[in-house]
Length: 510
Image (cartoon, rainbow, N blue to C red):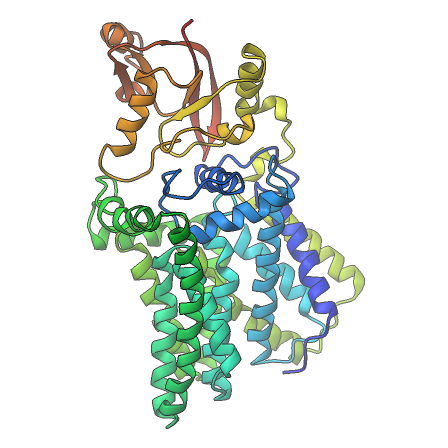
């Protein structure tokens, strides 16, 4: 492969800045990223900047790396998502650069880098697997693509990863583990296939020696993570919330308890949706190219890693975004296109390139689920309207509790740092967080309470409230308190993930 020159980085940056601005709600084109997951990462990240410790001071279940990344983004701006958008763009640029290096293992891609960068980013980041933007699965694409590059280079060029590459490989694996350890399935698959290939190449001893650098890197990152929590006397909290709860409570939640086979069927249906047709098409195109060129060994590796990772990521808890890292394999779908471009000696002049960029941007806009919120005004966003109301009623000095599952950015819009460990509830079984939140309300600690999944009332009024709301879709989520010291101030509807959601603002009785 010819050396990728510096202007390729510029091309990747341009492609990413445009496509991510359209597809990620963290970008400057959106008034707010109201994804519950991203909002929770933001709150915990903000807490870190103010001396609070994940798990110990704030209950969460994702790995600590995602919180540190959000804290880093908030150093740029604590009251907007622009820092997260920049981090997303950096990760996306790394993903594209490594993807170009993968394609360079098969063809000379000079003169087609911009074409490939825009095409791949538009296909991957506009998919429904992207969700709203800023998720760990999306950010891990660059790490996943690097592992695919190493194993593909080994299979295609018989080049065993160098000591430095194995060390970097180990750092990436550790980052994945401390972000969302189920994503490590892909790394396990890569290592297994590297081991198999090293046996066939009669260099297993050399490969095992190189794995020492991989292990050292994993240990180095893990020591830093564990050291942070040890210094803050939070090792048990880390164990409880990141490991124990995810293993024994998250997967045991009744909404996910549908069996492994049904989970995999559900996960498959999430990939083969109409809006993911380009991703699926390029995955199939890659397979077809390997078959046509009789690269069966590489194809078996590709399929083996893909299937193993898919099963491990979705067997217990399938989510719409769970398979997002596997979209790194879409890069292979560009191989037949490069072959045709090279064979026909096609040149992409400035006019054709500009038209192509417009098409990629347009497709991203049409396909992405997020663009209905593009360029919306803050005054049209319920989170900001509620924040303005609370600010006005209490002269800016107030506390707010979001009661329910995964706050859709009400804390963010308010600019407040939650005072309570259970700042919202998580998708895990058990009542620990609900009981904590009920205690806050029973003690009348927050000045305001915001809900989107529940209608709150006094137990004495429960029968009347049920009767009044008999036909409401959230009737089953009416929660009664023995002494509910709050009154409903405002109620508004907003669209979230295609559904109409009721947002309610309660104020404490004087």
